[in-house]
Length: 357
Image (cartoon, rainbow, N blue to C red; front, side):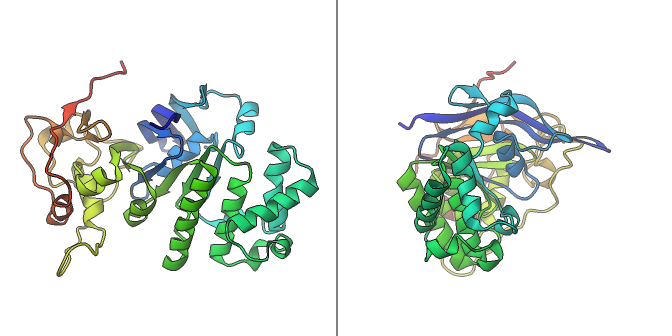
């Protein structure tokens, strides 16, 4: 079994605004093991990016702040670590690939200098050694003629090439954790596939752990070991890739999967649309955050927040539909088609005991 490298417990992140406190992340728990890829999925506004930026303490304060919870990395709680110590971890032990490579790169500096910067700062390399390493990194991420290209500026690269440069910068110090925040969003499908293949290949070579943020479940199937589904600032379901794709239990996960085209079924496909909009986290819902958008919502969903139910050792669901007294609800047909691919060992969920007072 892999060694656990990161553990997040009861994480709350808020933003002070003129309208009041926006509770962007509300009690998130997850862990990351050495060498694995965890995908965090959900639509815009679900709290994915805020959660991962909190891990690196990149939440602008003010207006944002970590209100509660712990982020344990190698025995240290990053949520409480002084900024001077956090600077030694950020970019060295934990690196991040941001969504838009053009805004991530400094247009006034050559890409060589930008790759060299973390090497000089965190690895104490001389400029000559850092330059040699920059050339090696560009080769590693598949950019041709690296000796020439390190002298060029970001605008002289295509979108896919710029993303490779950003990945090279993130990998410069051989980080133990790599956070990829929708790294393929701005790229066309062919380049997306190349970048995803590159990340899988690099993970094998440098043995890093990856947290992959995306709203695209098709991407998840190709890169992740485990998946956490976020909605309304909370993780509503988590499990292995097979559990999330072929045995989902939360109505929101059903909606995400139902809206994704697949080549696995024959004939015409009926894609499912999720009605409504995400909740206003300035005034979070009293009960289940997804209740207003769910056709399966019960009275209790509007009154009490559901607890987590354990379907298997790796599969957790935050929904009252898992309660033994809940009605037996059938998922949409597109989800049931996927479920038929799984072994017929449909597990019954059990309530997870409260570990926090």
